[in-house]
Structure formats: structure tokens, C-alpha cells
Length: 445
Ligand code: S3P
Image (tube, rainbow, N blue to C red):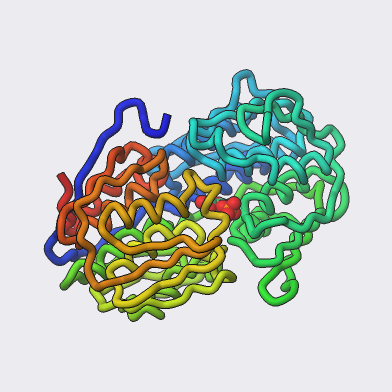
């Protein structure tokens, strides 16, 4: 299956100037982590601004299945009563992570450090994604795959370690999911678990572990990397978490406002952690008008309001070392590049092949279907911007929320409408995308 049971197609067409103020939903990465750390902590965790998308709700369900109490409160916050490090109970049914690689891989790490066995499963997209990258270090720490897992794919049963072993692990690719899985398993191991990354990936796990009371130290390693050392077997304490708006979701209205002539919008409370802002850096290099106001650091992650005005964009070269800080944003950057004047070269995109879909191929297909000249050369994507996009194409979303949203953004400024075959997966990360974009002036039908 490459779409939902009841596909809901949608068409986006050239729209008048976008305007107004919007707050995109809470950050997906932080939302998953707040639920998982809340479940591993002693005492109560209160989370405000949690993303209530399907991916995160599946993580909430898995935390309940492992013994934590997770409830939505009357004031729209979420409360987690944790079980403590190594305190997970044996789940009675398989844990279903739906479309979410992050939820699945991080919970694998948390389970690996507890003496319980859990079945991990997900939808057709998640079943096709590689899990060996996470299972390899977790097995070094003492966890075992006891059933399934053929070719490193779901469904599989993971038996957590009774006495997890601390390791020093050099991640083979820059991946916050691999790093986080090892650190979460390391919480239950005696001594120091160390992760070394050649290129720093998003550091929300490290920041939040510190916030919950863990002993964790992160130091620079080489040119772009980090060495993260976590001392295990300390207690985590329930904490207050405020989830800022997700920069990866803000990317869609942001690019829409840049390409729809005359637009001027304000996106509030967007997280500005520098390990997530590669898209903004790149768009500014392309000539985008993105102004940060009301800059705050109070959540420990950084946050600002972004005023975005329609801009004439020009092609640029995006260096490979920037990829970890914008890994989920290349689809929508490719849309911006199509409307730019000149060639944009995005280098080092091999990791895009193992996301919710093969996003490298899907991006090229999306652009070609709408009359844009594009080429994949090795791991690089080359887009020929001509200042306008003919449009008129049908885009297959391959169970991938970000393909659906990127294609719809493209249609808001293309000569002819752009149609997507299925918008159902948008609910995994941005359930209100369509009404919010309509409120800003987007025309969908
Ligand atoms: C995420 C990490 C990224 C990203 C994903 C969220 C996370 O994956 O693509 O959407 O929250 O840790 P990788 O770290 O595996 O690249």
C-alpha cells in the first residue's frame, strides 16, 4: 500500500497574497522526547504545546502500554506520571508507531535498557525503513531482537537488557535518532555511555535530558561533530516542558509566503535551535526576507517570531555539512529553488533516501511532474530555477506528509494547479495544515 485506506486528494492553485499571523503546531522531535523522558522520570511531567499529530499520539500510546500514565489535561496541556529509569512494564500488545521513525527508534532505545520485551510495528512506510542502524548499537548494549526483524525491518520483538552495558559509539551517519536511542538505553547502564557524531545532529535529547536532571556533557569533536557523554543510572525527575512551534512545519507557510507575490506573514514562537535552522540560512542566502523578532531563549531551545515577505530568490549551492540541520526541509527547499532564478545544487542528500519515502526520488518526481528541470547526480539534487513553475501535475505522496505539503505549497504559486493524490498523512505532523494555510489565504479545492 502506498497511500491511506481512504485517500483524500487535493488541488492547490495560484493564490492572492498570503497574509496574517499563525502559530504552527509544537515541535515533533521535542514532543516525542517530552513524552518518553516524562515516562522514564520519577514524578509528574507537564507538557504544554505538545504536537497532537498522529506520530506523537502513537508515542503517547506506547508510553501508556509500557506503564506510564499519560493524560491530556483540561487546559490542553499533557501530564505524564513516569515509572523511573528501567521501570517500564511488559507491554501486553504490540507497540504500533504508525508512520513515525522517530517514535519507533527512540522507544527502541528506551526499551533496550529495561528487562522487558516489546513488539515494534508500524505502517507500510515504516515497515520499509532501516532499523539495523539503531539495533546494532542497542545489541552491543545487551538488547536482543528475539523475533522478526528480517533485513532489519519491522515488525520485530526487542528484548531489553537486564544489565545494559555502557558503550562508546561512533554513529555511522549523522542521525539524532541513532544518537538518542543509544543515550536512552544508556540511562539504565552503569558508568558513561558516549556517542560520537562526525556531524552534529539535532540536540534536543541532550538538552532535555539535562532539563530532567541527567548528568550529560556535550563537547565539540572535529570540525562539525560532537562527543556526548551520559552518566547512567541517575534518576530523572519529572519536569515542566514548553514545546515551541516546529521549524520543520513552519517551513511550509514560510516558503509559501516567499513564492506567492505580495505575501507578508508572521509565524510565531518558532524554535530557533541552530541545529534546526539550515533552511532559514539557505533561504536567506537565496535572497529571502525573513526577519526574526521577539527572540527568546527561555525554553532552552531558542524561539522567535518570523516575519516573512515575498522575495525574489536566486539559486545557491547548499553544502553537505548543512544537511543535518535541515534534513526534513529539502523537499520544500526544492520548491523554493524551482521558483528562484538560476541553479540550486543541494549536496550530500543520501539520508533522504530512507525517510518516510525515498525523498530524493520523490522530490525529483514532484518537480518533473510540474515542468521543472531537475537532476539527481550521485547524492546531489540539482534544480534549474526559472523564476516560475508551469505546474499542472499530479504528485504521488508515497505515505509521506512532507511531500503532500511541499506539493501543495508549490501549487499556490505555479501557473497551473498542482494536485496531490492523498493528503491523509499530513495528520502525522501538522493536522491543521490545510485550514491554517487557508486562513493565510491559500486556495485549495
Ligand atoms: C528526528 C531526526 C531526523 C529527522 C526526523 C526527526 C528526531 O532523523 O529526519 O524527522 O526527532 O530525532 P535522523 O536523525 O535519523 O536523520
